[in-house]
Length: 393
Image (tube, rainbow, N blue to C red; front, top):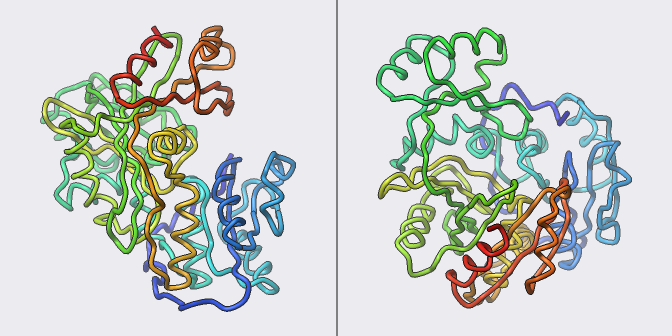
């Protein structure tokens, strides 16, 4: 169970007015409903920021970087938005929070609501919806002129009938918020759709209908500052055997890299991001890259680790630097980076094949969410792909 998302996820965007250089102590309030974002907490601490982490009662004893925190506060699971607003407002009686940060996508709308209530600068509810709601982000991207796969709202029955008449099967019913843990449904006929919608009941409007598109899938991780992408890396997702998952940087001289980074340069800003980290997903169908979804933040699925191995850029650290530079009205420039190739492979902890990681030189190795992962680095994308193929083959 996660934070209770606000049903009224619309409203004016949070103020982006810069407060000017702050004298004295700077404080961030970071909110997380699962263990993630440790890199941001450590980076903020290294930059001299005093940080409070607000998380759930059950996570109070988790392995947080406590040396980087001024305070760790917890609250019960399942709190309403109003209850969280009251709690944070009570905390703010004695602490002045200069920035409020959602460490995960799940926390994005909650934090946007807090910002609007407290009038703290940052992404407001309307903009946050484009980075949390798959339907909102696809509508926004299509209206901005980006190529998007075929989809439809699960709302008006006639719209769905027309969609199925005009769009070849198979289709998929997809939760509009991917981290709720809700099931997706493959749909092959109209009768199947009506049966599933009956089963979903009142939850059906929390889904969208999409055409299933087969093709190679990519992610572009980027840094956005003052409404412009100032750094980006294109990565390709792969699937091996025995539930192995791979992720690798795309060849910088390839058509995929050039087209993906060109598309991405306008995507996050067009969806209202002024500053921050964005990770956008695409699928290649024929010669076109179709937008699928976008998230705010580096995530915790290995993207940040592959980007760091390939470029030296730590997305969590850069995010903290972005927030502090904006707060102090200072110019932000990404840290120095290099151009290597890198990739990651992961298996379930139960897989015997994870021992293959012992046979290669790893930049990093870690365990998380029941998976064992490792990162490799080389001078070229071809070398990385060869190593990953050896590991999962």
